[in-house]
Length: 221
Image (cartoon, rainbow, N blue to C red):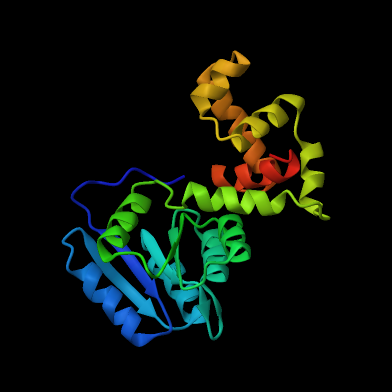
């Protein structure tokens, strides 16, 4: 679980992009902000994975596609080693499959490179503060695609959940907050949080957004 940030501590950022000019531009943009600190950068997915695990930045800004891999693969490997590292996928490709893969890899944000510099800076701050930067409309689009019937071994995981956990997962897929779920199911909000912690573990995911996507597919939301 990510710990609250101290307000006087700069956000430590790592940059991964195989285009040197893009990487320099990002470096200059972020370095101009007093509350952001660049702790490392690379143009290689393999090197970045090792660097990020070693340096443990607060936020890793990862290019979607690279000659030796992808930012999504880096995100998955890094979060497997250290779940506290937050990741933003910065890509030129508006691709539903990549977005779905980014969500399932545990990314906290997925934005196109056309994003304005000020919005990117604000987004990095938001992610460092524990918020998600994945556009809800993009998640909705992915959920629409997932409604199409297909074989999915993850559906077997639904059998691992209790009836109560399945109902809560369905509410998560509907976009309900913990408070709304608690009111709907006549439970204490703390009880709902405990249920969610358990069902995330059973589903093998770490983020509520990941559970929402799985729930949307499993319950055909």
